[in-house]
Amino acid sequence: MDTGTRQHSADFPRSTSLLTSLLKQVSRSFYLTLRALPRPIRPQIGVAYLLARASDTIADTDIVPVERRLRALQELRLQILNHEQTPLAFGELIHSQNSSAERMLLERTPEVLGLLSRFGPDDRERISDVLAIITSGQQLDLSRFSQAGASHVGALQSDEELDDYTYRVAGCVGEFWTKMCRAHLFPNAKLDEAFSLANGVRFGKGLQLVNILRDLPRDLGQGRCYIPLDRLAAAKLSPTDLLQPANEPKFRPLYNSYLDQAENHLAAGWAYTNALPRRSVRIHLACAWPILIGVKTIKKLRNAHMLDPHHRIKISRAEVRSLIVRSLVTYPSQIAWERLFSAVR
Image (cartoon, rainbow, N blue to C red; front, top):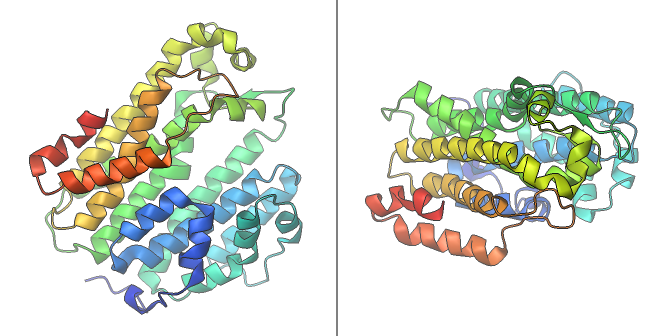
């Protein structure tokens, strides 16, 4: 049995606005997943998400100089790791937010850190470990694209760099999720640990790769290209060529190869989900929803104008609701459930 929970998750105030209204404001899609999670892991994953979202907000505040954002990320990282007790100095970052939700998130980050301190040592270590990796990825990304802008498009060098980035900002979350579920939901279940951890990582990488491919025109407009230079060169393309929608036909084969990679990662995530104890209905649903939304997004991207900055692919709320209902209806039949991924694809 895990001994790392000083205060059991069920003892957290259910009315804690940080884990309800604030989280709902900063991420409506993840909020659905959080609400589906079993109560023993809901607060830990909610707190980890809020801190990751806060660090992401810091990294994305382009109006603030890169050096200041890097310093703020390091301050937050030290607070999370309990290496620093001085108050966070986020004033400039807070006032630079256009979104009221993002502004409130940064204002209340000290309260979120207070919730982190209420967990026992094992859970604090799991949360701190995953956030240390995530913030390292964000810091690396800021440094890598420090000179990027509309007039200068920087790019990753290779698939190895892309794989490393998707691990740092999302694949590591699959590991964290796996360890948290194992400790609190089914500590004695007979599971293939290596299989679960490896496919948990692929699950996270797949979701991040979908985001990268969906947001490609927006990132290019900010001077960031996550399609590696060596792969572009092989296709006789450069990062700046991707700013021109007319180059879509030439780019499409390479783009599709990354869609295939993302889909294969999500297929590994589906295998991961189905390897979990079937009695854990809530965790199956919490895993299934982002996977199915990701697969649905890939399907749309295969026929989209992926270089057109005015044509952003997004799954509608009606489509999300449809996938949720479909998963609920399908779950009682194991055969129908296991076929759901292929059916949506």
